[in-house]
Length: 167
Length: 391
Image 1 (cartoon, rainbow over the protein chains, first blue to last red):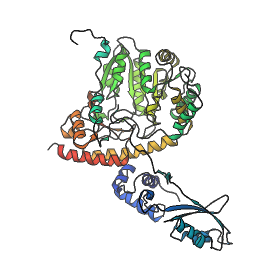
Image 2 (cartoon, one colour):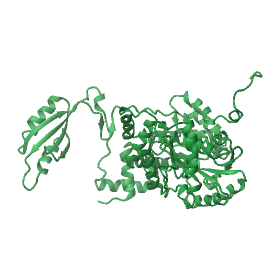
Image 3 (cartoon, each protein chain N blue to C red):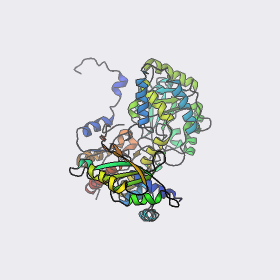
Image 4 (tube, helix red, strand yellow):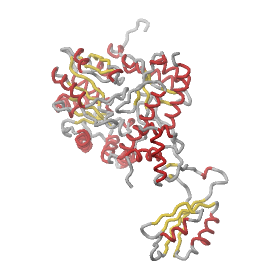
């Protein structure tokens, strides 16, 4: 779909700023009225271009909430008529599954799972995922450390290194 | 001095210390200051550029380069100036790579001035222009622009101060500290004056990459002006490379060769690793620069409108990353305003009078700061104004 220049402007502002940015500040940044900004936001949500306002949280810092994340390469047999979509749907409906992507290359689906422990993830893979009819094989990779996630660097020294006043 | 002899040159003794220094000392010791007083990008140099400099060090490029700079870099600069601004300079004879635009200003002035020659400085201006003219033996003649004209210089104002000794006009567009950008027609009017009185124009185009309204015009691109223009630019602002100290100057061959003479004796060449970084900055494509520019523009829109909402009237600056609001509604001088705002709310701005008399009644606020900090700064300035607004 074709978006207007201001719709794209609003999307870029949302993508590059905190989800808590007030509508009036978005309006000022995009040089449009508050009412117009609200209309654009509603329209973008209606079109499902603007899907959700998310926060990026580093749970690994929170005691008792560290959890584990695994990326699983899944090979599947596509079905006539529905291709990969049906098996993808069977997978993404599990609430443990954070993302599912159809991939080119050595395997078909890339599935990201979050669980409280390695055991929990292992149980999910062996009991739920591998037992699906179309699933031929799985390879599970556990994530050891998140350096950068969705464009955000987790451990970054963000101190302003500039001198306070300069010409 | 207790009657002892001063060893300091008269010219240097007469230079006023920069007013920025005092402000820096005030703010530097404080905790929790939001600084809008910084004249440089808040972005760190893009990684691909830093990485190219690291690679040059790993490969052992640690020796001098040609005086005028790496030929490869001068060729890239020539291509960039042609493509971005439609001006063509010969990399062999018309481009010199310098230690920041600051050194370019210095060698340009020293190359053209004889003792007593006058240089017109359009005010409010970058703090170095007046002292650099004096250090080069020239006489700075300041012309005050007016808030009512959006801090744009009018041709008749220039004509009033031109004498037989006038050698050059110094321009900076987009401007530090006002953010004002001159349009093509306005540059043309200045060009006519330069032609009529046979003057040179030192065009400081360091903020050319950060032009938000309309098309940016280089002074050298005005027809007939290349031969009268000394075009000064660099990587500091648009490419977020202030600490690398890398600039360049483009001028007709005779002037370029004169500048190169000073450059080779006084500086030898610009730092080699910084030249390799600049090469990558030009080759890496425009996406980093474009992303930064978009971000500044949005912050400008937010910040300028918010200042106006607070009653600090401010024209929309066409470029750079400065807002230059009037603080006259508070009844304070710009120094009083800046000092009290810093003490009461811990927001650092730069008093406008530091940039020349016509800057009085204004403060320079840099919006090269994160949105979160700008939002907080606006809150604090609002709180300050509640207590200081004239009844």
